Amino acid sequence: MKLNEMQTQEVTSELNKKLMEANLEIGRAETKFGDASKHIKYLEKDLKKEIKKRNSLLTRYGELKARYEVEISRSTETSIEISNSININDCKELDLLEGQLYVATNKELGVLNPFTAGYKDHRLLIGCSIGSRLTSSGTLPVDISYNLTLKLRAEIVEAITPSGAVNNYIRLYELDDKGITVGKFEVESFAMVIDDQRTPKFLWWDPHMDMGVGLGLRGDSSIDSLNWEGLASVGFSPISYGLSSKDLAWRFARISLDVGQEISVGLTPVLYNLGNNLPIFTNLWLGPFGHYGLADKQWGVGMLLGATL
Image (cartoon, rainbow, N blue to C red; front, side):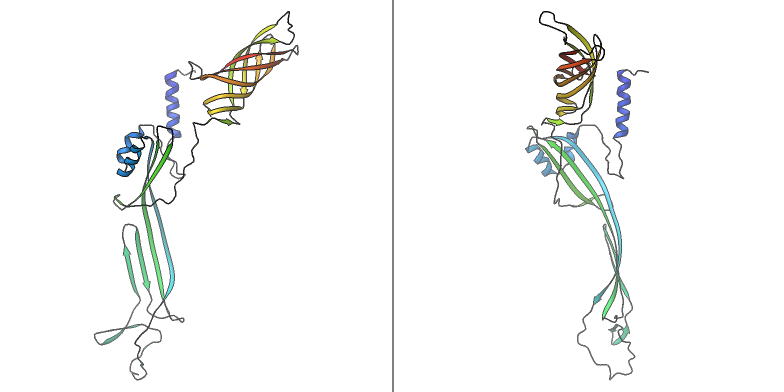
């Protein structure tokens, strides 16, 4: 069943919608088409000023929220300093244990039990347990655990200046448990690599199929008798040159199957693009070709006019 133009657009739109869905496990954003410039109102004042100063157009706006959580527990030791010590040999009634910590309160001396301390805010939960008896090395055992939870929000912006220069911006913010911004990260490094669509380049593997018609002379022609031949051609070319695969200026090494007075194989070394976005066709190509007949073994040369459908 052949789809009409509207049905084709609907199928393509639905396919693109699925291809643009988010996959957070691999970090793929949910991509939407829309007017990115409308989102400039969400940016900070200094970033708005920067973009307007450059007379730039917002071309991309992205926002993400992320969460990082880690829980760590460690055992360690801490040293202590003892000053103003007294000799207890004269106080034999005090049955004190070697290495045990004691505390004096209200003229009384008591055993210090292991104690704990803690701290909590929107990003940290810290617990600390300290022993009350010295180890053989004269230190106190300490157990520390913490739970770190960072909630982040990021804005990623792309803008283009009238001269064609592209600027990318990123802002990173810390959020509290209620989603309120409580801090801003200092960006130490931010680099983007983009394909320069303004500079033509060779595309060494850029396969294209096309159909064309050719007019040329067969190899058995002479000055007195020119043997003209018209033919239809279906061809394939692997190499191209242009701004992108959809915006080409040249194609190279086209191999074809041609039908004229006989079936032949052809080669068009180079094709020049006469125009983009023509009615029905996306490109119209012109180039010199040669072909070789499979039946009578005759060569032919001429000019080919082809189109990419």
